[in-house]
Image (cartoon, rainbow, N blue to C red; front, top):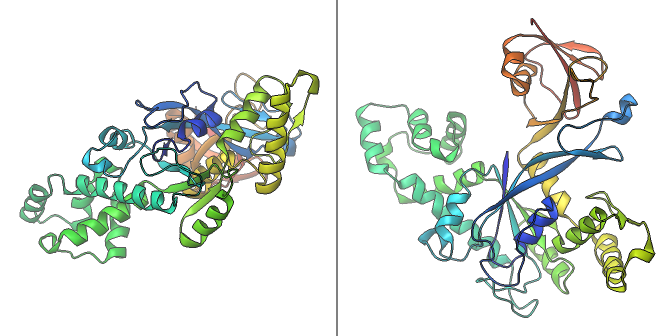
Length: 398
């Protein structure tokens, strides 16, 4: 699973990325700081099941804090985008190519309006961030249109000659975009596309490109720099202007400061929570005290959280519609090495017990006999759909 951070230059993408991963990346107040994509490990937060079973979990991957399980996934920060990127302007071509593998996009938006369309610093509030939402979607749509049209005439001739079925032919043509036959079938029905390819004109291809982008690259908007004067008002306006978009108020700089302070043992802080505790005030400089006080009063009290963890969680659970499932080897909740609740998998919400067995290991799937829901103690069959936070023991023939 790969999530891509996108947005124009100087909107706070690298700060968001570092706050989410604590990876060492360059952060500066000028365009195109990020040339090559940064990749790191970020985490989604799940209410751990350890408390329900009265055990202490021992994650092999990720970590657990106060019954909150943090499950890892890959996060990528790509080069900043400028209008005309699909035509090669700025770092456009590289930016778009880097995004091909992303399952979800996080649009880092400077909601304070303190950077213009080129990523240059301007007076806060003097630029309308709504423009960035529109132009980013246009760039992505034009990129998709270019990919759809690539080799289109040859595809049409071949499809007509072979009398190919619409959905099968189109899904084959678009396989590079992560499109499957089911997706194509739903899009054809939604857009009421003609069964005859020869009737498809430029407008139909544009509509198809837009829907393909929305389907294969769902997007959440992290409204960054929410703590800057005037940003909160902009956020409220954007919520009204884009009611069908998922927007989250966010201060990546505040989250980065809290995670760095926790890393250096200055505070106790669980990502995504609405508070933190200073461990030893004598170790803090006056500058650090002032910064923490600002975050507490101007960010956490006002917006509940810094928003960074909320964005990550919603990207996985709300947009991708994934759930967290714990596989174990026995009723003691351990693996073969006696680690308690060592694994937690992020999987599609409609996954079956058999599909999950294959996700854990091919041999387990091939030798599947039954699964046991250890919360209810019920035996479930291979077609049983799993639920979020299920703890599953899988019985095999070997």
